[in-house]
Length: 454
Image 1: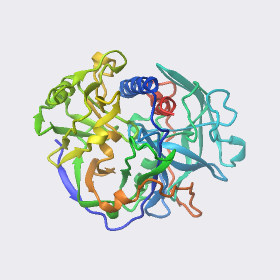
Image 2: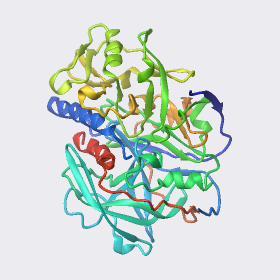
Image 3: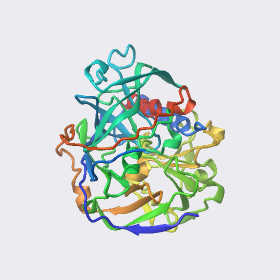
């Protein structure tokens, strides 16, 4: 069973993020956006596929960007020798690194692509791969090269290079995805970049953390705004108050960052969460909160005037816009964390009718029966400081500090790509490979979010 502990960090560096906002949507664009979010969430979680030296330790920083009205958050890493810089989605719900390759024949317009001929350390693994899901696909090869991020470097990291992508799946300035989940859900079966670092003792502490900003429905926000901070190897005390409450990942479930969801309340009314429907994946790469249809129905039953969506809004619920919803979530035996009413309101269909950011996710809607019952995306994560700890495997939450909220004011300075002049080096990227697995569609699923809301 999960337990709840506390930890405070006493040192480390921090990382600014940036958010991108493309303005208000027309009614037609809103319908398409909501429909696409439904498809993404249902496709994202389904059946997944079934010694080293370290030279130093440290804490790392990386500049990040919040993309498309709080829908996703991306950072910057470098690949090759000399290094080439790329923007990648930071995704705790998957475990693979994937970028577009130079010479990509389809779907790679106006984005940075990896030039294999420009890297002296590039290795072609002579292995093809294919990524396919309901709305698109990508094809390419697996490669190995030096990957740098936040002052850390891993030689011979296995990653995917795409040379053919369905139209619209990659949107400038994002070139790929960095999975921050465990190796057991990696489509290539390679050890993820972050896991190589932590297993080789490269980090001061075996954890990484996020503060994600909120600019949703800010009319005059710039196309990109400060989006928060990401850290590797420590938790930034300046960004939270009180203690970090850790909830253990159940034994044998390390793949996703899964923790038990033990209580939900809406407008002061407790909503029953059956024991079989408790595990929640904490996922920075997903916009919404997804859960079992019976529990989602019970939540909206406590909101006067709410109605189930139909047609393009199937799986969603609408409710009167004049209500500020008091919604809380509890994990393990810890704090009841509040979701801001502005985050609970996913979209406004008209002056009176709004769409909630909770979505029914189960097999009746096409979701995978073997996936987690709940997905806690950025709708929730914007409200807390979140920490992902490797050992003991757990996820921690803490209250955001006033200093954190002041970091991401509208019109703030935007980050620039960074690479370490003398990076901390770890070795040991895995070499076990499996290709053309259904689970490898995760990278494409996240990228598709960028197309529909751009």
